[in-house]
Picture 1 (cartoon, one colour):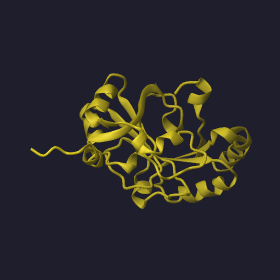
Picture 2 (cartoon, rainbow, N blue to C red):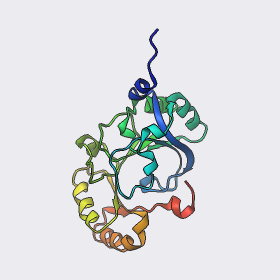
Picture 3 (cartoon, helix red, strand yellow):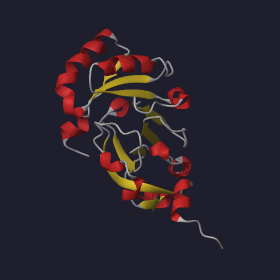
Picture 4 (cartoon, rainbow, N blue to C red):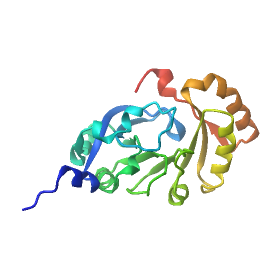
Length: 210
């Protein structure tokens, strides 16, 4: 009997480079304030200079973990699961989301949309990055567009990105944490002039929780 190597199992989505997993409160976007179990998967080559989890970029730094173990851990805590990264769509999310959905969990993803959409999702939060733009299929499927605002040019970028998603997609502007005091006045002015948008804040950082 030929056993698959660990690398092959990762490529098949049966194991994933797991950076961390934790139960907390969703701090951003449409589901802010909801208890959720976060699964942070390693691996990302989008390379945002302001990324606050750069340690997630190299998947080899994080142990390849069987998805059965990940699912078992998640089931102990919450019915709302958020899969984030890194960039989770670097990997095939089909097996993991199938296992979670079999347990009747609500499965969310936070993604840059730079890779093909795999998996079955109840909520797709698309956070586009200029360095590696989303694929058309992710724009079409997104339930939420969350644009991180690092400078004023990002407001024009956000407006252009909003034209690519569906008419029912929720629109959010979120200040990058290190420049939040500088950017919040511009964001609030923009939202008041464009009320189809809403402000998202990283409330988990204010609450001092993961």
